[in-house]
Image 1: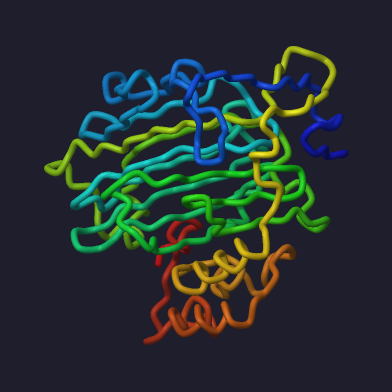
Image 2 (image 1 turned 180 degrees about the vertical axis):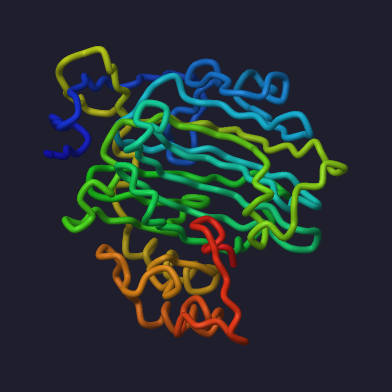
Length: 337
């Protein structure tokens, strides 16, 4: 395979597409990065949930709710290959155990057996405990290798809106919270097709993840506190949209490209390292219960390894459980901490 950067020709072994730039002009409405904020109807359509999705504030703010009947979600009109994707989100408050709010990219509807995915997942908690944030990356259906990282947030995400962003290029993926990077995934030769490389849609959903989201399923959604409402605004879709009906692939220059981060500056990297040091509670690279040796793309930081080992000596230490008890955990619950 030959992978392209934005603005270059792109070739995939599985298909060829024309890439065209999605041009959005919204007068007087820009994000913190001076990128255009689009109205919901310009870029998205409802995925599920009927009247559990409500559009507010001149069509630029969307509420997704979860109740006993259903969750809800929306999806972008277009597929995208690379770009910058962002939303400001305010999460539900009070008892939210079992609730999952997701802001992610995927092509699972087109490639059921070899899909790609880039995830922000927000995991609810019992009263008095904060939401947690999980990031994950899949490529080419590589769900057998979970690449989860999890963090405690340094603010209450139910008090106000905070911006969550994904930068995806042919060489790296960066997750941002309020324009500060918290994770960088670099494509390495050893990852091969495990790095997302096929066009994806952008999704946002709220749903019942009682079986795994809070303490591995110990605490479940309690619908007496419903509806649970996640609020989305400042929606940014800034990348190359894909027309799957065409036979050639070309990506033109993206407008406002100077406003899109191209990497992590030294000052932002210091901030990222500080956040990871203080707030990261799980990383697959250090999980000795799941992997006898770290996956090939992992770069082991001795300080991170030691801190996580002290935090959870079973998962990140010698990989042995106490009292001789044997626990079977699936991929999702292995990351629950």
